Length: 325
Ligand SMILES: C[S@@+](CC[C@H](N)C(=O)[O-])C[C@H]1O[C@@H](n2cnc3c(N)ncnc32)[C@H](O)[C@@H]1O
Image 1: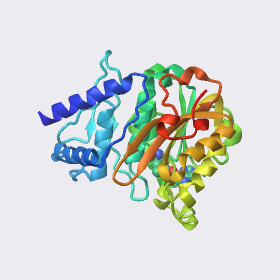
Image 2 (image 1 turned 30 degrees about the horizontal axis):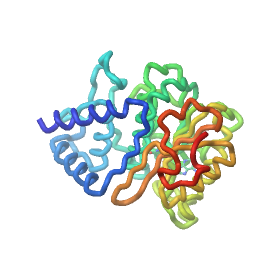
Image 3 (image 1 turned 60 degrees about the vertical axis):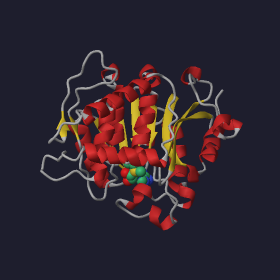
Image 4 (image 1 turned 180 degrees about the horizontal axis):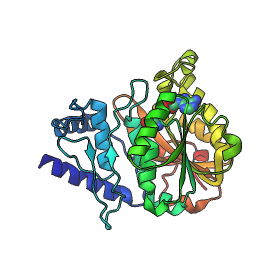
């Protein structure tokens, strides 16, 4: 009963997300805690196929997958629901909760915020008719797989690319994509090194949840799980390397969705992109106990088709250069 109510609430939320309005969500600490408690309670009896209990992050993954329209099945970590023609969101994918690898970033609040931003902008994304989409820093593959599911059959001709500097991440992503029947070219490289010539000006959508935590510069050059979060000075070292590459890869009508932390000075990031000719808007804003996240969408100025329902810069306390045409 509790699960049914929970599922109804989620469906209601999905319906809301389905309209083409930007979602600016501010999850207060209390709400976040309640949510987690409810989750833990709801998932108590859920065990993985190998009989082990689900970890907190697996439960979070489960919750996020439920947001894509799937309901929990007691005693199973694999669920399969046929698509109803009237459903707003694509279903029918055989969703496998990927347990991951100790050196690979598990989907977390920032990953969920990015997918929520894609869901919030789904109407625009479907109209966008992207041909080439890319994720930089795929980790577990949760985001690129979700993007493919969100775009669904309506955009069946899309080619997906994804990169990660961590070879373990590319292996986990391969499994996640495979479990969902999604094909993507997965490249183990630094940002998009070696690909720029081939993919220059081709990407219609790029999604990035970069390592954004302020750390020492030494940590940025580490290996394994550390590079998932180590963002260097102000958390900007990797972000500042990614931005010019993204500019090269995006097509004229290309969009970038990027997660940032308030500590990264997002308004300054928008200024950097503004100088390259991009307008921007916040699609999701979320504060948790640990961090204050923004998911920002960038597009080349002059393309007004993405401006419906934008949040203005001034209402969010950013300078006027941040906004749109
Ligand atoms: C915060 S994690 C995000 C993972 C996944 N996209 C998600 O949202 O759950 C950042 C990811 O970027 C990868 N990464 C860090 N530096 C990178 C670089 N220079 N080039 C490519 N990937 C990088 C990390 O290995 C990690 O998988």
